[in-house]
Image 1 (cartoon, rainbow, N blue to C red):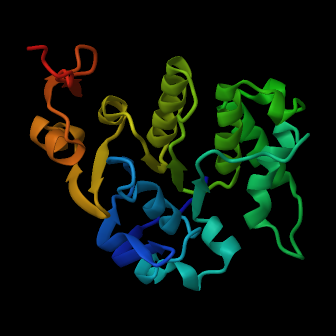
Image 2 (image 1 turned 60 degrees about the horizontal axis):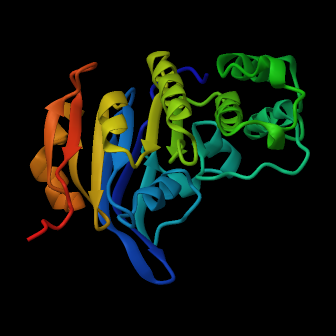
Length: 268
């Protein structure tokens, strides 16, 4: 992992558009360093769009993303990728690629014409495979892995970048519930080891259980942020998701747990 001062990532008056239509409007946000932040909100509210802008994938129509106080788009691509790693939603691996070869791609930002593969690269890849429990599968084809193993392979690739900040766009999509929790536990362990993690997630209860900081988005804006115990309330869930609910302490973790009210129309 990269060493030194914590990486800071922020948005200033950010507007992001698709086809001329703003999805995120005039958004200003500071991502807290050293936290496990989850971004939640209804479909179409701009969560993934914001993450793509923070990861230098989608250039904003106006405003700035600031990496360590400097406009993100003023960095060269490889230089930015040495600070921030982005795992997009539903990434596709080239056909026939092995797990080891996929993870080695995470070392690309560290290479130049004068600096190619080194023992340090080999060490970073070995660490990433070991940390994600894939050491014995380095020679397996990524396309033949189970869904949970494949997602761990992608996590290993971004770990191999050795950045302090990881951006994960809906990392639990298409995983069964056991693999969802396995992956979130891994993210929590990586956070405990010193990484700043920002993830987009749909499940409110998982977000409240694992995040140390929540950002709630609605209609292209941040409407609430802070510790889950302060952010997740029945009033907020009703306002943002139009869902009546009770918010109770999780019996295992005491974190907020959303219990929806019935949405069925009463029979006369």
